[in-house]
Length: 445
Image (cartoon, rainbow, N blue to C red; front, side, top):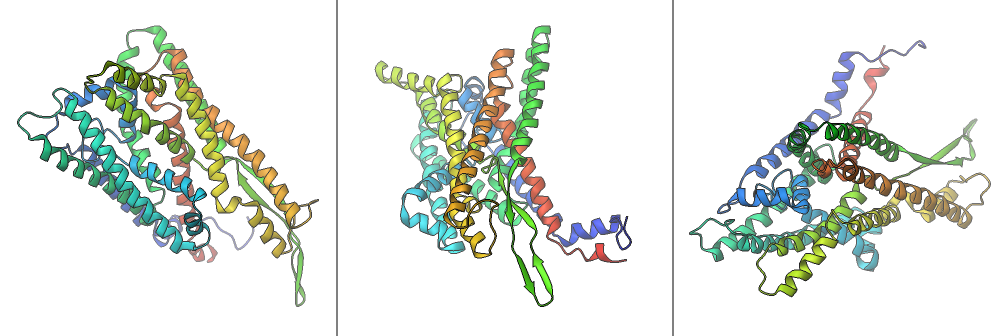
């Protein structure tokens, strides 16, 4: 090792931990997660939890939603709605921002103030969606035999329960925003991640009971776990892969010194949206499926209406091929959508900045030709990433059907991609906090 350099000691690492504020961020994040897990266990007053828990185990859609809420939906807790309304509101606001010029201006031209105003609109819309979902849920509980405890006046119970469920969803949204601002970041994704992790022991127990008496199922389980492991490897590759575009920087002379002249590159991620296209695709598909599933459990006086609801519910169920076709198309479409709204993936802006500083892509003229070349590169890169993400999302689900191990379907591709993606994001967040500190201790001799 060259003179003047030394390996960081334990004291250096401890100093880096303290100086970066990472310890406080991690402890704050754990505190918020503890509050979320506490709320997920607090039951809603007047509900017989066992009745709905049995329904959740037998219904794929409700069971899948229960996984994302960390068991809060199955427990019919005050956090039963989870972060779903906030995620759905974020999707709608972002999609509408592309269409409505006033909202697009807030997002692109008015800087931090505009983004704060847009966030406020998202919060208000979250309240509306949470109230709507709470009302649908409580109407369903009313028609579910034995779900509401006897002797409770339903009118007052309905109003109070809708208010509690709505407030619980808003509180989860607030916890996620606190984690994003004061914790280690990505609060919404982390809340979903914790919900999935908390459900793994239950899925593992069900799977063990299922395969314990069958050698064929045990071999199928080993094959399924191997497919899950390979899928995780491809997820990591997808998350970390980048397309590097070489940039030639001009030489500049300042006094007697010459600066620049070295080549650099612009990294374009193969999967620019990370786990968000997956989360948004699930939210978009499960919203109508959940409403239809809950309505389908009610007692219909008209058989025709019941048949229509049941048919729609079957078509959009995770057991049907239509669900997976729509799931794949939504992932591809949302990946392109995320690439189109990310500030660091705008060809015209990048070309303008390159021309401003005299940099260029080898063999491409500055200005409009550079923007067109970058647009072609981004389109191809995003297409490969979107198709790869969509295919990866389908493989474990099909593997569950082939191996006949249905108990792990809830933690299939969607959950795997979210867990691995969020874990990678957390690692990158920690690296960012560590690199942001003062490195004076490493320069001392």
